[in-house]
Amino acid sequence: MYICICNAIKEADLREAARTTPGTAEDLYRKLGREPMCFQCIEEAENVVEDARAKARVPAVVPH
Image 1 (cartoon, helix red, strand yellow):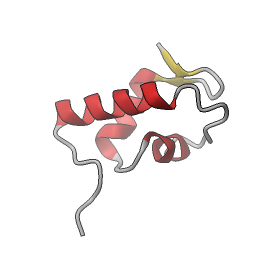
Image 2 (cartoon, rainbow, N blue to C red):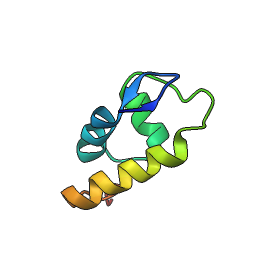
Image 3 (tube, rainbow, N blue to C red):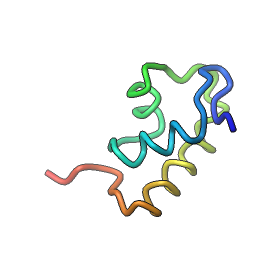
Image 4 (cartoon, rainbow, N blue to C red):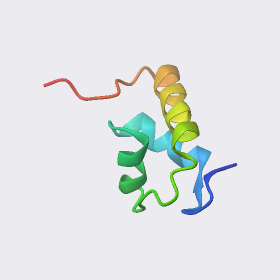
């Protein structure tokens, strides 16, 4: 399923990025080589990121 139509970001790709990279959904879009455009997907993207990290037990940020 696509999370971001503007950038053709699939849920599976966003979940993988969330498990391996800290940051917000917007940060992960950039990690995937894209920029948020219309921002209609960001809330859903954040939910996907949160869910993926909870299942993988990955923190949202890297502690200093």
